[in-house]
Image 1 (tube, rainbow, N blue to C red):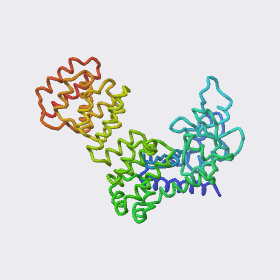
Image 2: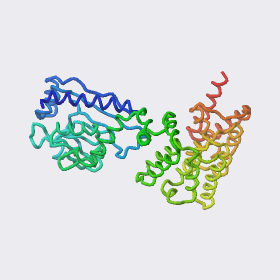
Image 3: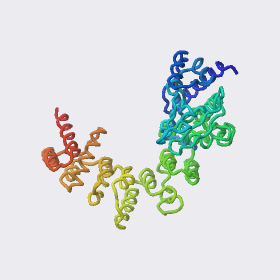
Image 4: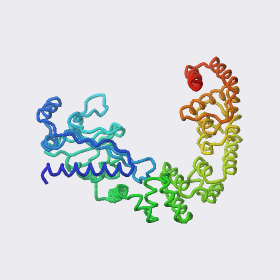
Length: 441
């Protein structure tokens, strides 16, 4: 196939890929396909590098594009079994001798020419040592210092990486797909990835809403936070829906995906999953798989509030009784889902430095002005937590409920400013005082 025709095919495939990914909710950056470079520009770059580009590279820059950049990433709610993302391109200005981090220049740094750098510092390289018109492409990992063959030629690499959705350019994106001859687009992993990506690009909500299995697949790819998706699930009996998600939890090997499966249970089954949630408190295999923090999340979402909160508070009390260190981050991860003032009352005797986590939990737990006053007048940790939490509430546009005793609040803020030692502590008080002055006017 003539090079010009081949490049037009690439450009068309990239444009369609980015259109599909954006339509389906992936994060995409503007597709860059710049006009060809002028011969003088190429010659200046060659002169600065002290080397002539291989003929195929020259042709691509002269007749195709001087710069290509493709970037996409899947939403955090996508249960992608491969965890891949898109990062591919080249640029006349990006062609550079690589630096592999050694104290002295290595022979490899004059063997390879870098044409693209991944977000983490990994590189895509052409191998000049072969003298080929269309040189091989390798990736280099900045952490492993290892080279991985991606294509026996530059054009072969572009063809294959395009077929795979322009994945890259961090070397881990290629590891499961790399074979002896470069990227393997026919192997089992590649076939599974291409099938998954094609479904992601083409499956619409309207189509999924008409078929239970497609709806399950759509939710796995997009989450079920959208009320349209929740209504579509509501037309089916909740038990098989719950069974689907629980079966996935039982098979899940990635701990980071467990939250996504639990979110699907909350969004599509909700309080009907209370029996399953109660079974987690029996410390059986389901609980061992998801752990206490996720158990607290589904407990807050699916059990009656009083029952759920008391279960989690009892668990936190057991931690204290065992004299284990209860830090703010752990308390917050277990209790913030409830958004209950009762949590503030429970926190009071337990808080300590560092305040991180405790302040967020206070802000999330619907405090009243009386709570804020009590904590501002409390011990040093309580005062700093209250000030930091108040700042977080100002940022989110929230405020405590109830009647405010402004005279007492202003007095306590003055005391807090006088007692502040660190600059950031004074800045917290200043910000609050400034917001109060703005509110008065």
